[in-house]
Length: 116
Image (cartoon, rainbow, N blue to C red; front, side, top):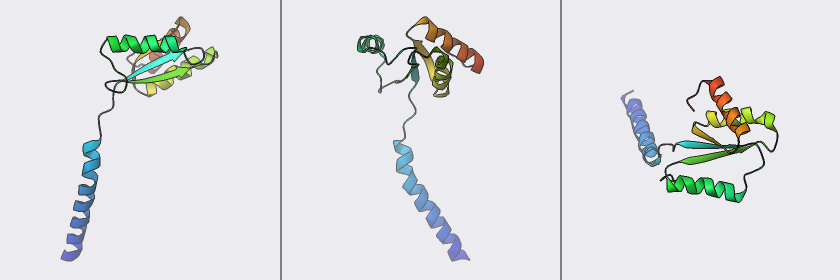
């Protein structure tokens, strides 16, 4: 019985040693900025200006923040679900291109009682 216990201890030790490098490489999740628009994917100048504004503020996508984008494709009734999806993806801030999207984001935050 003592040898069985030793085998289990060795297997546990090896399993922990194998998982340790993976845990050491794991990085904390970056904060998320949600980008919500009621139309089709934003034109290049709009998204470029948004990203440049973030860079000018010291926020770099991929380095210290993640940007999640959602577009309703002109279907305004989809905006609340898209905003809720951003909240579920832990968006700390939702940037909306136009008033309709901003209102949908606000209502989704209120419904889910999230801090947006």
